[in-house]
Length: 126
Image 1 (cartoon, rainbow, N blue to C red):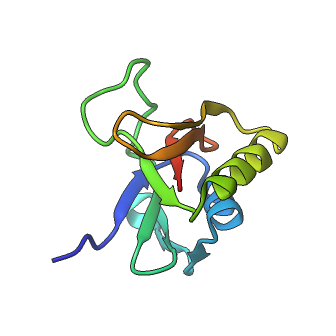
Image 2 (cartoon, one colour):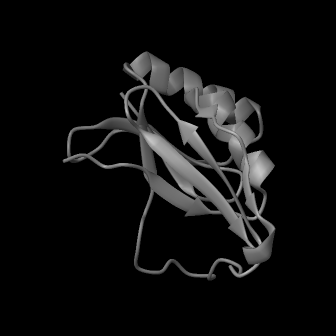
């Protein structure tokens, strides 16, 4: 058994698509639109079998001010500590909020964390 994909509600579908394509080498499929349900989405595929569905709906409201139980973050493995540093610096230079600087975590990972255009945490791991 394997994970098929993860899905993320968002407000600005195009900004999110561009972010994951630009910084994480995602490849977007065509936009799916269902006007009757006020729904749009893209599937973004990454190396291997990983996929992220980004979705927008007229039925979904704003994010709560405090975190709720549920998914916490998404993580991308970039191959080396140097690549973690390089991508973190590229994102910083391009104006994205760095949530945590590159470091070795207590569970043995080397990672940093950045907020995507809508504030969702994205880990960058070696």
